[in-house]
Amino acid sequence: MIETEVKLRISNLKEMRQKLLEAGCRIDRDWYREWNALYDFPDGRLEKERQALRLRRIGRKAFLTFKGRPLESRSFKVREEFESEIKNFRHFRKILQKLGLKPVFEYRKKRMLLRKDRVKICLDETEVGNFIELEGKRSDIVRLAARLGFSRRDFIKLDYVQMIKEKRQQDYLSSSSKPPSSSSSNSSSSSSSSSSSSSSSSSISSGS
Image (cartoon, rainbow, N blue to C red; front, side, top):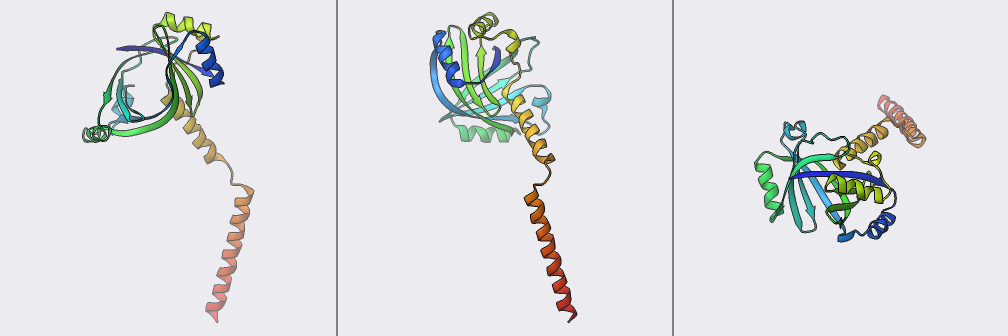
C-alpha cells in the first residue's frame, strides 16, 4: 500500500479541532497516547536504506508497521507502508530480538484521529510542537488544507522521527556548550579551597 501524506505545523490544538469540525470532519477517536519504537539491525541497514520498522503501542493494542524508502515527490511524503496488529506484545518483542533487531529510537505523542471523506486526519501533540497530518489522495489533501487556511508552501514532508532527532541533537549540543553557572563555579572554588585547606592540615599533622 502506498501512503501519501503531509504535515502542517499549528499553534493551537483546540482551535484547529474546532476548525476541522466546522469543515465537516468527524472524530474517529478522541485524544489518546502512543508509544513508538523504531527497530533496526546492529549494522543499521534499515536506516541506511531509508526504511523503517516501527512498533507502536496504544493502550493494550500494538501494531507493527514497515515503511519503505520514500518515493520522489516535491510536496508530499510518499512511501510504501504495511501495518498489522500484534496480539501478544511481549512475545513479539522477543521475536524481534531473536531475529537480531533492537530498538534504536523511541518517542511518544498524543493524537486525535478524524476523517473527512477519503482523508485521514491526525491532530498531534509532540515534543517538537503541534501538527495536523493529512493522509489520502493528493487532490483531497490540497483541497482540505486550503479550506483550513494552508497552501502547498506550508506542507512538511519530514516525519516525526527526523524532527525529534534533530531537536534532541540541538538540545544536547546546547546543553553541552553552556558555561558552568556562577553558583557552580563558586561551589567548585569553595570545594577546591576546602580541599586545599584539608590537604595542608593533613600534611602538618603527618609532619608532626
